[in-house]
Amino acid sequence: MPVKARIGLFGGTFNPIHYGHLRAAEELRDVFPLSKVVFIPSNNPPLKRDSIAPAHHRYEMARLAIDGNPGFALSDIECKSDRVSYTVHTIVEMRQQYAGNDLYFIMGLDAFLEMPKWFKTDEILANAALIVMARPPIEMERIKESPNKDGDNCRMDGKVAQIGLKNGKYLSVASIPPHNISSTHIRQSIREGRTIKYLLPESVESYIINNELYK
Image 1 (spheres, rainbow, N blue to C red):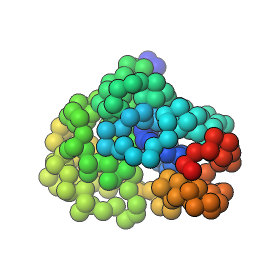
Image 2: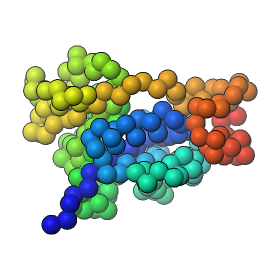
Image 3: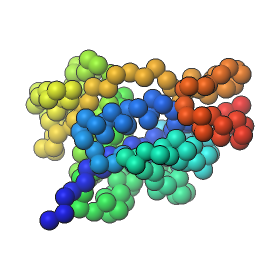
Image 4: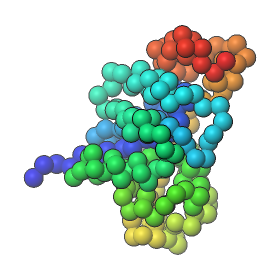
């Protein structure tokens, strides 16, 4: 029998991708462990509509950023689509692409708490396990706010909290040290003419400058 791979799906606008994204993905790959983390730049996210660089630019920046790491991969499944980027569609298609393997959808704590607003949340939870990134210490009180949580069914396993969900599955909450870099800060720095060096890979910085992004 072939051994199942553990595939992490890391979606986001990556507007632009930076070292915070890359380091978090690498730490998750080590903690769980994941065979591969697939970065999935969004095209037209329904809850974020302002100041987003065109999808082809964000895809290319992600490609440059992960170059040289065999544990990272990149998917254009959302970038190449004209429809709104609903997570449920992406996960169903990725399940077909990685048939026979275990899928883990990676998100931040704020995104997890917003899931009741998402399209077809139940289908998302049915088709992939969840990994939530949280700053240490894990804010259990915030997690309890989620309507998807099953009472007080939770346990700690090292750096990871396992939270029971109402569908019988478990949510993994990983304690990831904060990396105080944000895409918002990078965009603002560019608009104000300040340096962004050492916040993202040099190849991404060069791409932004050459294509005059975020001016």
